[in-house]
Length: 367
Figure 1: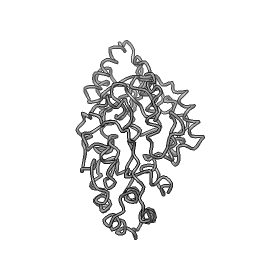
Figure 2: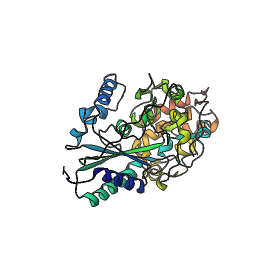
Figure 3: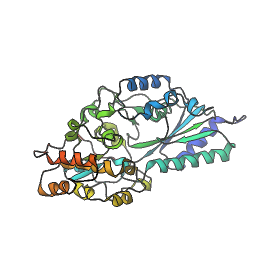
Figure 4: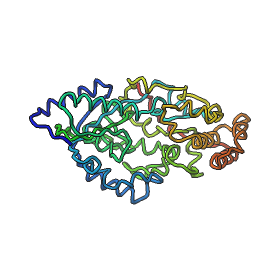
C-alpha cells in the first residue's frame, strides 16, 4: 500500500464524507482496525456452534477481526450505510395474511451487493483523483469482515440486542459497506448503546432465536433457515415460520428506533415483481425459468429454485387448509427434488393449521 505525506487528513476526511453523501450513502464514518474484543465474542459464539452451517464464519480465522491480515497495510476502515426500506405494502398486513408470501424488505429490490460496491468504487476513484493512488479494498458482505462492529466504531450506530446495527437517527433498515484503506484519516467516536431496558426484539422472534440479549442462535433464525440452510428445515421450527419465505424482519419491526427510519432514496431498492404482496400459490407455481427470470439482479436468486420451493411449501403448510392450497401442494407431490417433496408432504399433513405468529406490537413501517 502507498503512504501519503504532507496531506491535511482532516480536510481529506471531510472530502470523503461529502463524496459518500453525494454518491447516495446516507452516512459515512471512519474507524481504526482494532477489533480485538469483538474477535473474542465471535470466537465464543463459534465455539458454541451458534453459526450452524455457516462454516465461512470460522474458516478465515483471525482475518475477520484483524483487518490488517485481510488487507496488509490497512490502517483505517471507511464505513458507509444506505437506507433500504422501500415503499411497500405494510409488513404487518402481509404477515397477517396466511396466503400471502412475506419477503424480507431488504430483498424486495435489486441486489444491494452490486449497488453498494459500485458506489464504493466511485468513492475510491474520487479519493484517488484527490490524493493520488492509495491502497484499498471494497467490501459489501463479501469477505471475512466484521461490518457491524466496524460501523459502530465509525459512529454509524450501536449493535442492538437483536445483533443488528441501530442508528438513533435512522433506525436499522440500512445496508453497510466498507473501504479498507492505508490512508491515516482521523477516526470517529464509537456510538453508545441506547437499547436500555427494552427487549421487544427478543420477545418478538417467532422462533426464539435469541438465547440472550446481543446473542443470536443462527440455527433458529428464520433468515438462516430460509436463506443459509441448505437441507431440511427442522420440523419444530416450520410452524413458527408462518408465511416468511425469504428472511424475517420481526425483530426490527418492533424496534422503537425504527420510527426514525427513512425510506430508501435509491431507485434500485424499489419493489420489483410485486413481491411485497403476492400469493404463496402464485409463487409456488413458478417454473425454474420463471424463478430465474423474476429474481435476476435480486438477492433472492442466491438460494436457488429448490430452496425457494422448500420455503414456500412450509408457508403453504401454515396457510388456511383449503382446496386451493391443497391442490397447489399436490401439484408438487412428485417434485424431482427430495427436499421439496419432503416439505410438501409435511405441509399436506397440517390439517389444523397453526395461527401465523407475528408480534402483536409491531410498530408502524418506516416512512
